Amino acid sequence: MLIVVSDLHLGDGSTASSIPANAFHIFASRLRETAYYASFRRDGTYKPIDGIDLLLMGDILDPLHSTLWLDTAPGAIYTRPWTSFTNPLFSSKLEQTTQAILDGNAESLKVLRQFASGERITVPPANAHGEPDHDAKDRIPVKVCIYYMVGNHDWYYHLKGAAYDKVRRNIIDTMGLCNPADRFPYEVDELPELREMLGRYKVFCRHGDYFDHFNFNPKQGRDYSALGDVFTMEVLNRYPVAVQQHFGDTLPKGVIDSLRRLTNVRPALATPLWISGQLKRHAGSAALESELKKVWDDICDEFLQLPVIRAQDRPFVLDTVDALQFAIKIAKGTSFETINDIVSWIRTRVDEGERSFVEHALDEPAFTDKTAKFIIYGHTHHHEVISLDSDSEPFEIQDQIYLNSGTWHTYFDLATKDPKKQKFIPYQTLTYLAFYRDGEREGRQFETWSGTYA
Image 1 (cartoon, rainbow, N blue to C red):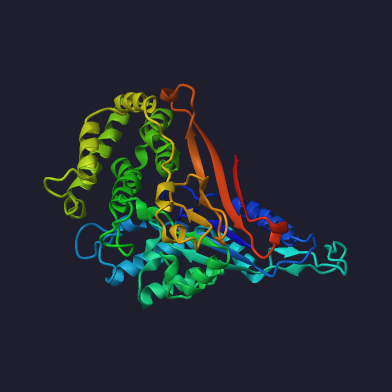
Image 2: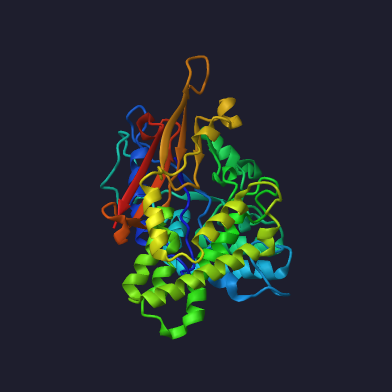
């Protein structure tokens, strides 16, 4: 049995909160149940499965959403995700950030480590009649082999070198991974054991950022930062820090905490509504709201002047940098209230359904040469199951399906009624995919489970 999850975005708590540990306990309970039913075979007999493969398919740990990177200013020790990763300061900062994430999610990651050791998932043995023996004194432990692939928020773990092997070894030991210390792959082919394992289930996987040029630079590859990293770090992460530095202890309680939740707002277009609503709730002053907006304008200006941004602004070509410049200039000097009006107007006319990558699945070699029955992406946080193609004999693989693995995330979702009133409802989401082989689950091929709870 193969389980695939992605986009957990476990952070160090310095920006948006990670999904709480109870999500992992829920997952453990569901996985134990799934392992039991997977032990019923196509012929109706019960035979305990001998193991579970679990693929963590990118954006699992999230060093990008950490303010620990912001403790240096431009100069000799300036370190950001886009500075040279051959500099020892880079690996040291990644090590520090990673340890903060592991410490902040210790209870959650302990569940994964218990999966790997066989402590958490058990099933009853079979009796002489091929049935589960629920009265048996001992239960059979089912060990889980956990592989880690990287995405756009944790691509740093793909970097080569002894310093990064040390960081990976710490993650392996904490989470109970099967990866070697020198390899957290971005592409399936980078780790033969992973490729062979997925091949047994007729599955092909990639994180999906590969198709998002704001978060992946195809010319440089996955060992380099992308424009989205810079915007996240220098605008979204930095804004609460800049506000606190500017106002110190004079701000009303709750302002900074609410601004740290920017990346949990859904849909993304509602971010200005969230900021404005939280300021009204906690600040209670139009003058203070105006000052906070000026801080936002200033960091956006500084963002556009960063050398890494200016270097990506190609002359005479309308590109993503130009779009950011346009959006920021439109917003500059405009109150959050006016921006809210603009956003609300746009939302009535624009379909904000998460973008699907299904068209890219049709071009995957694993799809066209029919070596994979299932093409799986993550990244968009939008769980999908879409039929791709179906053929008759003599092909071994007849039906092919695209799936998106969704996310595990805490969200603050904008209420549909009167969006301008800036009402948000918090909840958590959890999605996982399951694939079977060798007659497991009474011959079933796959399942997907997506839940929402509060």
